[in-house]
Amino acid sequence: MTSPEEKSSADGSSAGATTAPAERVRPEPIKAVPVRHPGRWVAAVVIAVLVAMFVHMLWTNPAFQWSFMVDHMFRSPIIEGVRTTLIMTVLAMLIGVVLGTVAAVMRLSPNPILSGAAWLYTWFFRAVPRYVLLVLCGNLGILYARFEFGLPFDRQLGSLFGIDLDGRFFGVSANEFLTGFTAGLIGLALSEGAYMAEIVRAGIQSVDPGQSEAAQALGMSRPLTMRRIVLPQAMRVVVPPTGNETTAMLKDTSLLAAVPVTNELFFQLREVGSRTFQVFPMLVSACLWYLALSSILMVGQYFLERYFGRGFGTQERRRMAWRGRTIGGAGAGGTGTGGA
Amino acid sequence: MSTETTTGTPMVLAENVHKSFGHVEVLKGIDLTVDPGEVMCILGPSGSGKSTLLRCINHLEKINGGKLWVDGELVGYQERGGKLHELSEKRIAAQRRDIGMVFQRFNLFPHKTVLENVVEAPVQVKRERRREARERARVLLDRVGLGAKVDAYPSQLSGGQQQRVAIARALAMRPKLMLFDEPTSALDPELVGEVLDVMRGLAVDGMTMVVVTHEIGFAREVGDSLVFMDGGVVVEAGSPREVIANPRHERTKAFLSKVL
Image 1 (cartoon, each protein chain N blue to C red):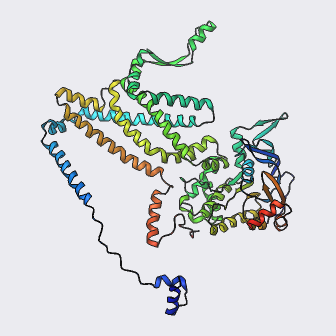
Image 2: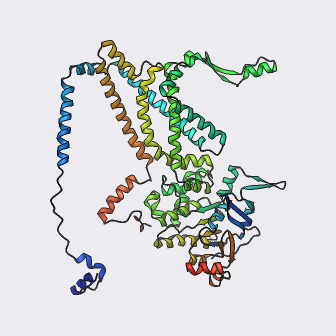
Image 3: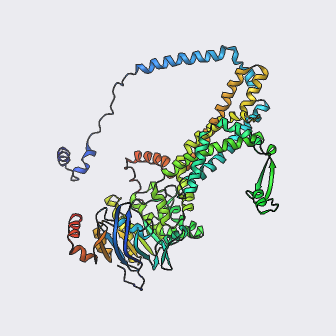
């Protein structure tokens, strides 16, 4: 304890104990023999052999028919299928996110009717498998010949009062409206909405209640607080699982064959496969297509996460940590204290 | 220190206010008067109900009994035909608009910059023009000494700086009353001073303030009145110097001897 002071006084400096450590000789950087990791080498060899075997198999097994696959996987019906799959994914997710957000806000509302309705919706659509739901949507035409919009129970009320009441404003034929695409979109979006409702609810509940209190104390109404303060912060928690959902949705479009939607990607690829009796190459090309498409989605997710993470200091903290290291380490949260 | 500008209607008037959470009664009959321009400091041990009282004043908590007025208006209710009617969400929000509140944990909006934090309520609630609101926000931020930090996010600021932004955010709504809920309790000791300085400035400008605090020095120098609460009741009230120098009640003496 006393040695630095003694040293500095011996040196004749009057600065005292605080400057003492600077005068000590800086030790040589440590040069030590690193620990050996033989296990890593064994693992590397084993994995290298397995990879070599796999590549060899890809190269030599004639069933892959690589040139046939490449030749057929970019034909126009396939590209059309990619387009349908992407459009379906985006639309179903958009509707699903909106439905899910509405359902989550309803679920957390103090109004028991709204909250109960939201619970019922989530309960039903999470329970029914997507495949079953899609088949059901494809057969909704059995239930209705036409879809009409207008006053509820108009004919029943009319006959009750003995008048010929027709309160329907417009209608479409079920066969026209429920094309495969619409039916499939309805099925996927309704199912997605139920999952998104739970994700958004978790996001909303992750926001510190102090945030709503601060907003309310400023005179902001409940809807305004939700829209301007809570939901933007919930997004930070909502985006990563929504990325998962989008990837899942992309893959679940292959279930649309059940509706049936015939111009989506997987149906088209299998169609080529069964027509040409080259089933396996087209299945491989399906894997490659879905791999490519979900990789594109991952890039989009990265930018979304960066946007909604602003102010929560992932980038800032990294930058601050970097600056801290070069300056000499200010404590966390203590940066910029002298700024004002 | 502000001069007393009593106009007849007190800014805050509490009459036998009761508040329970479930079976636990937190406020057991509070009577209180805060005149316009007055700075009232509320002292007391944790759990004495002082924060709850503050939250009742802007209706973040609903009172169970008694009556509470702010500037002559009943908080959260309307009296019609001898009956109390609950106010709608909208009316309650309108009442809160004129009451600024500063929280122990700042509660700045982390996804918005300092300037956006201050501009948010005037633009969204009062429908002020964005440009004018921004200009005023800059003036307010200058006043709390953060004119250089307008584009920073709250996470990049120290606790003291965040609390000063929170004060500017509340002031942007031009409140007639400011409530402070232990504004310096979450701060490092060396950062307490900068926040108290801003509050002192507000008091000098004549703002009506109710401050729940543990800063005895601030209460003595800036406060016009002091209330000591314990167990949900007002134990002692009076001029700060008087109460701090010569506490009459045993409970006050015991508390002050521990914190001084």
